[in-house]
Length: 82
Image 1: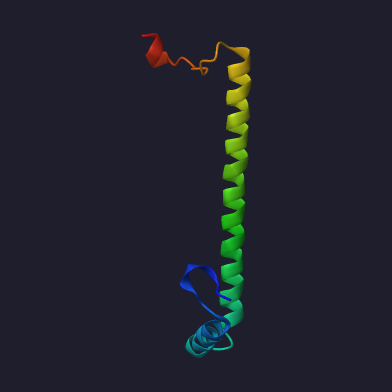
Image 2: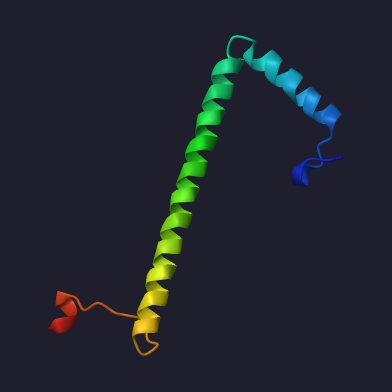
């Protein structure tokens, strides 16, 4: 059994965990784990918001295409009117 593209087995993961424990010590590990968890949570929230915005944009595009002539709706700005 391997994990990801690095082909890490259970033995390699245990060795890495022991090295991390020796480097940071038992007092810092909970703080590091908490920080890593918060980082992953923020990343997931950020990517989830992007997906929701993409879905909303696609829905708007589809609604515009159905109502119109097949061309995407283009809003005219002040610069375009000149």
